[in-house]
Length: 105
Image 1 (tube, rainbow, N blue to C red):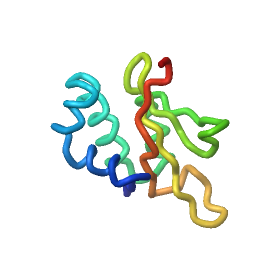
Image 2 (tube, rainbow, N blue to C red):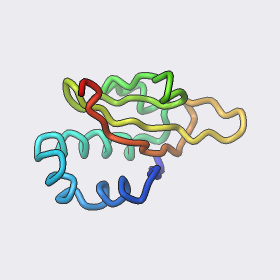
Image 3 (tube, rainbow, N blue to C red):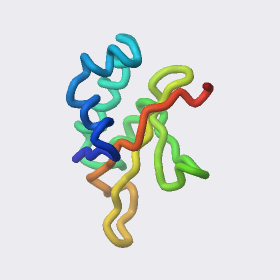
């Protein structure tokens, strides 16, 4: 899939994993890179969903329209499929990384 980024800061972290490592640590950076590579390798969201890796799940509330991808027990990568018109999520080939978050504080 094609991957875009919500902010310049997020893009810079995904272009420089050494910088990300300084901020969130080695283990989480390796896990995020693994999920990022899996998303990028999939042709579309449907293919990524079929893998089931990272337990992708639809989010609601402030993240309505986004999907959470499990990184570790409390950390997730949040992606938003960039749909064109009435396109179904499963055929979407472009996602935007919204953020990485520790959702347990």
